[in-house]
Image 1 (cartoon, rainbow, N blue to C red):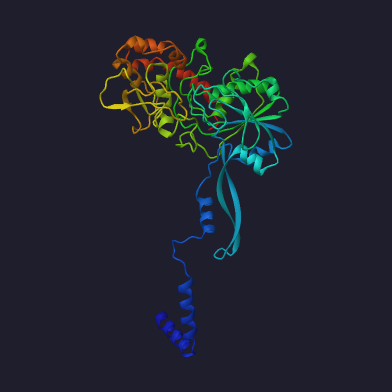
Image 2: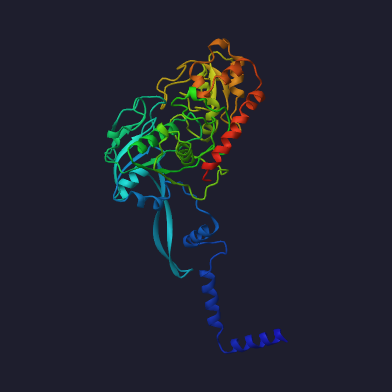
Length: 435
């Protein structure tokens, strides 16, 4: 009965000469209808806001700290990694939604350039760590004070003889911002610079704001702890080689453990990353130093850096820094490279000389501090008495590791010797974790 009624009604409509109108409406709807999988830019933006959680570094989270800099004279500790992603918003009218909507266009800019170009914040001075403000200097190269050619701001070097800002260099600064990308290794000197900056701020009553960034090796806590008598700029605190903390968490530990001179504490503000988990993989958008060009080198850095205290090259002077190792004193079997001067290595070890070793650039990511390549190279080198140099103990933070390798102790037994100290460190570390 229902179907018959519909048919009768439809015949009545046609009989009233509405067929041309219906045909016209059908044609128009066919022309204007969108495929079911089509989305306007506005709709896509809305869906992405609903479905995804936005990750922000501390530096990206501009609204959370720019108010703290208002009407103050600001200094900043940063280098080439100090990039921020900010939103450039424009408004469109969407006919489907029948309303105006903001479309977000992501842009990136160095934090110094952003402050100078887009804000009224009074940024007066830049403080640069190892490798300099633009990040092009060799490891260990002396950096002198100067001026940034783009902004005209004075640059104070915090490397070489002047690792700690002097009272004169901090004079007139109300607040200091710290924005450096760390890689989670004890001997990566940005955390040593952090120590001295915190100490200088505490002594001169300057607030320090740290813009936190993820640790690309944040899930790894491993290696021997540094023993106090072997403290140096490549290892200042009793922590393992891989500490598994962000630089903000590490600053909290320095303060909380009272590691600064005379146990003073810094007036500290951490701007955390948003929607970040330590287990998340994080690929650095900018290389943190000239000889860490990619994710693989950053992942292998802690394991291969031990070679810097031996007669083996880690690939400085090639395009695979900290992804290969070799020397003229290892067997000529499968792999050879020849270091040549390049950015970050003006005079590399074994410049122009054939080095035999191993290419690790394509191996799976490591999940612990690896000793196997160091031990293999030691066992295969021609003259073992010349393998280690005095820098190795500073990197290891202890004499025991060299003694264990020279004594032929198996790697599992060496690793077992760290475990008690690592467990105690992890308990202490828990107090300072943000993520």
